[in-house]
Picture (spheres, one colour):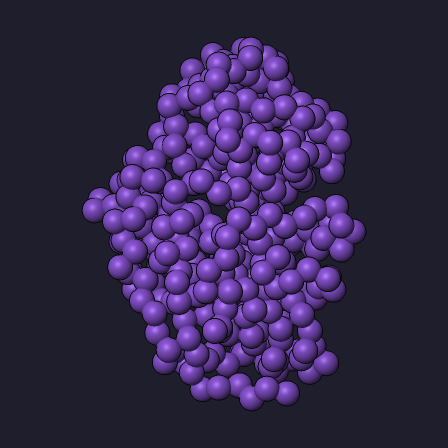
Length: 358
């Protein structure tokens, strides 16, 4: 058994702002597992929109623009009081919402037989009773995450996984696929027509696969250059991002974009249709004509909270080979700034993976 060192390498976020707020350190103390916790040696992580949004403070209500405009340099208007997705954050913070690794130590109350287990870590975690909406935290936001060689989590949030996939491949699933599955379950999507915006990103490409496994007819919005790749993932049809949307064509819209075209997303729903959002990369401030909402019996859902079975369902889909990883590029942890810069070009499909350790 490899000895556990006293210190570790980590990329540390020192406050809201630009890429310069990410600091590489090699002297961060390795955390010790408390009661009911496990210590995980991290094998791999990945980059997500929430990493960028948390770093820049985009979640602050004082920020009203899209996610790209301040992604490199931050938002001067961002408020420390509400810059995290659930409010204020304490710094320094280790981000990283995706984690695949190995349990190397356990705290009191955890079976020592779990040492050596290969695990994926639930991104959305509860500090209250399992499944409670109270005290929900996100890995890498309200608690230290996987942009480090080691992390501690509650034992129930480290889910054993047996798979031939690599750590890098498995680490591409947790945040994006649980977000997408949460949206799909919130909408109770069945064998219906669904439109997915932002379909080439991590969550969007995950949503294509997850919607297809439910038998839905999937239309993906993307650029022409990415169309073939999304058809290969399972999309049935492609709409260009700037295309006119057909009237009353979809039962469900899964939206990750928001922005000025948002009213058209409601117009493209059938009467009685359902709209679900879990992102607003084109901007969070939209215009709603209430007549469209009530005269056409539409239902609007926000989707953040995930009951614990969302993640265990994903583990089952992986084991059954029903979903597959989509990795565009891989970076070492010490090159996280470059990884985020590559992520911000939005030229990739799927996830940008982070290899932990040298």
